Length: 342
Image 1 (cartoon, rainbow, N blue to C red):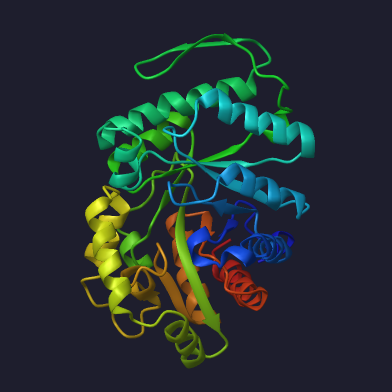
Image 2 (image 1 turned 45 degrees about the vertical axis):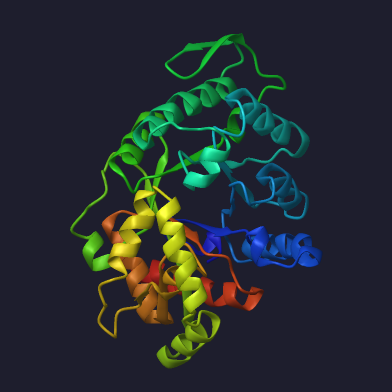
């Protein structure tokens, strides 16, 4: 999965930082550093850092990642309820000034209903996406312009606001947003973002081609080995079915209004053919928040290549279990590139 081995220059992979609740307190810092180093070593462009009321502050985690890697770009989740768009722009510019590093932004419109209620954010789902458009446009104008910025919208207004220190143009952030709902897809178009989806099996995605004028990607986990049986043994050992986890998943469904959460849950009610590498057990048992692809290197690589052929060029991977696991994932993506049409 090393970048210089990709024959498709636009194909990008991002790993994911561990959630603070999944790692013992005394080892969380070391885990963040380890996962970041594994990700960089195996060619990931960046690493997703979560945000919600139960997570560590994503900007502080992003700084740890930058201090312990040379090129890896934090993909920082941004929730408008937590800070003003000027504060986000200031963070981007300050990181650029201190470290000369580019970051990515994962723009989050919503989240768990309980989190939003605790913050007294009662904005309806689609309105939150409209707010996110204004929020992101202000950030983009601030980091792109050496001149003062003025903006007046339904949710935000700024007057002659200047960003200091200025951000070098080459460090302008990449921007992602969920594209699982119509409101999310419209937002991606409005702000020029990469639309990220939680995909169906690749053969079903082929029936829903992405908008050719919009960069798009998927969120997916990968477990692969040389032999099919070994991969499935590893997968089932790592993610055993768990009644407590299933109940937690059901509770999360009740407190989330995310379109992707509902769509994956409905898809999980339909059994796939045994030879299909698409696997939802980790999601259904609240051990991961995305589908997994499981199987031999070639079988999973073929599935990845199908997604690429449909039009997805960005892959946000689940949290890697180890450096060795990243090596196996790297093998899949090397073979997937070979499987892709020129």
